[in-house]
Length: 503
Image (cartoon, rainbow, N blue to C red; front, side, top):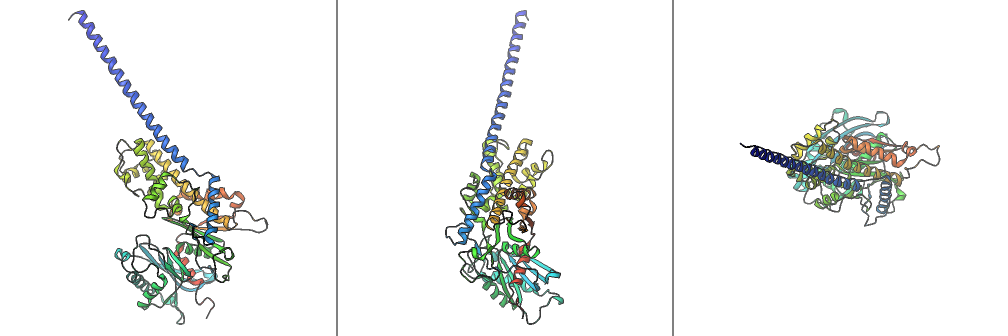
């Protein structure tokens, strides 16, 4: 081989090496640019979510004012008011003086509970408390009214038969029942109300427009069960009663679970639509049905609009869809889906499971949100097990954590604004002008979202304290009223007993 050939070969090799280096450099630059572009897209989506989900204190105060305005419209019976402010006919809340044996039936979903309490007055309070939970067979949820209520009455009759010898009533007394019925009802008295519509998977012929207490009473008669329904309530009113029995300063109850609602004690003369004689107590419990609260100033996003459109009840329960447990995980899923589509957050292929409605439940969102491991391995495991994302980068996991934080924080702060609105309506949002008057206001809070989602509940309480200000906040207590609706119904049966004046 000649010298020229060697030199030529060297030049070719060198040129090839330079060419390869250039290609590699371009690829690296292209990859780096692609990653930077991805980060820009991710930042743009997250920035938009942060803006839309922002809840500055000034906005929350405006929402509270809007809540008060809608409460007042509902109390005037304004037909266009989103808050119907239903009169519960509960004017005698438990005082602690109640004596005797009382029952409760708590029907609010695919299970119901039958409850028995022996009350011993102010000294002994609840002497004994027993309950059983019964699953409703699926075919009865879509059958006839008689079949459903006959099944319930039969289970209630079985439960009554398990009374101990020490619990039998005197012969002159009829057993009395508080009926917690957590479906939309037009209530006409403390112990009567007509069903407006079935929800929660029930679709039963012959009950809509009928008095649900009369339906249950006829079923109990068919079973030979001598029992009278003395109080018909929904779960929020029951929670309020249970809370008041424990603490006389309870002024309102809020449920934050799968769904949400609130009830509070209103002055009877502040209810323009009340047409009957004023109650002896001067007060009336109002069932707000606040899940249907809506206002133009609520921080509504594209994710909320899409969720609302695809639900069975579009345009309804707007507030509930922003703050309750049924929906928070779904809102997170929709944001993650947007990130997957627009930024390839989870790779070039969108995980098919991420497209499934309601696949991400709020308890799973909570578990991800509470992951404190340095590499968020528990969050990553949830993404893999639930959404089918096999491998996630640490960056993707931290982005998911941030989305959980944004959704939970907005929900908690909006819920706090609603509670603040109730306090404003009652004039309990400020320190009394007469400082010698000690004022204490207790909010009884029930529901799995509040009880188990600790970051949610901590944010709610901190936000409420911020809205009230340090001095007023010192007189407001938020208290967990775990599972208070069932015993609350039994207590309302006692406080509205036909024997309350004695025999």
